[in-house]
Amino acid sequence: MSGARVKRVAVIGAGPAGAIAVDALAREKAFDVIRMFERREGPGGCWIGDAAPPPKLRNLAALADGSADRPLAIPATLPAQTPAAARTDEERQPRFAESSVYPYLETNVEDLTMEFSQEPIPAERSALGVALHGPDTPFRPWQVLRRYVQSLLERSGYPDLVAYGTWVERVEKVGAEWKVTLRKPGVATDYWWVEWFDAVVVANGHYWVPYVPHIEGLDEFEKARPGSVLHSKHFRGRQQFRDKRVVVVGASVSAADIAVDLAHSKTAQSPVHAITIGHTANGYFGDEAFKHPQIREHPSIARVDAATRTVHLIDGQSIADVDHIVFGTGYTWSLPFLPQVPVRHGRVPGLYQHVVWHADPTLAFVGAVAAGLTFKIFEWQAVLAARVLAGRASLPSAAEMRAWEDDRARARGDGIKFCVVNPDFEEYFETVRRLAGEGQEGVGRKLPEFRQEWLVSFNRGHERRKAMWKRLNAEARAEELLGSSVKAVARL
Image (tube, rainbow, N blue to C red):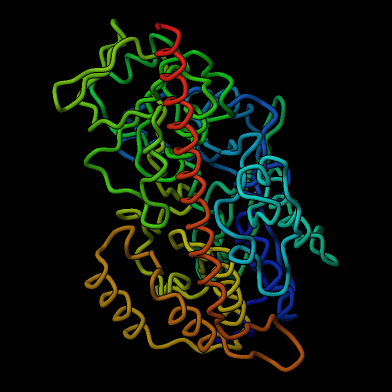
């Protein structure tokens, strides 16, 4: 692809993927215009904390079938002003821009695993982190990650490239250009307009739209007591669950964190009920968290009775007087602004090396992968995208790119496993680095060779968290035993 015709690039999203994408593009010194659009008030992506309470879940059927994140209607003529969407469409249709951060959230992988190759994450530790993992804890409070992303965008001139509080409502190819339709929300009116680009980099992440499975009676349960059904995205700490009977659904890490938090702190009623049996535990963290003595594991929910607040299970058992059901069941990947690019089975088909849309290489993605060394993968992907758009990297033929995808789909399946880089981290990093090349002398972000210590750190962090859960479980069992002994002595 010739770089001569790519002079204007739009970047969607100011989280970690978008921040490193802007840096990679700017360092190429090949573009006249780089514009970043971010719907939140500042940088950070999913590491931004919210001051306002989270919204209540609604339209659970749409959350179950993946249709909840629908595009807004675009005015027929642009630019235009319309009544504020917050009082019209968004009142009926949530847009899912709220944070998933709670006050004491920390990273769950080591800092070395997360940081970009040239920007170390500051070694700032919280009292909670030290208490849980020791004075050398490698885990960082969420505020550190927020500032880390912000610092990357505070490089010389970068803040001038970003339009915050701006929603990308549609991206479509018109002739040789990308037409980007934008909306700036206001108190009374929204302003809509169009900007034109030669290329677009999608870096908006895919942990925004909560997935809540269909369960008979769940919608009635929530409507009867608004706020009784939550997704882990809307968890804002343990206090709202004090003395409540809680069912946590999910066998992966967010459900584990919430269940342990509620159980070990003795905030919720004991036991905390966890829907895990028959479900696959997180491949990195395992199921140790759910072995806490104040957590009781169950199989899947069959139905919920709103009138009696009873959760009926598929084994015929039931949990009575339930106050809250918390779903740690992941997210639905949604791209409502890109109607010509489908999301299928949790992935975007047609991406070569998870980056370049081979139907049109002027559309690139940064972050279209599942968990694992993600920040570093974002960096490698961003550099490849920047080099391709600058005309300083060569791609295989369209047939070869399609063959790569077909081969991977046969090996991994046409679903989320397609996007999992693990265990082939080194192969992927080195393939992307080879495709990106060194670029032009004196410009561009340089990618180092893959270092095994990154993978060692990645795995070491998982083992450290599992060790923490084992320790907490042992402490709780010892406390239970002591309590039983004290009661036995008192009866004598």
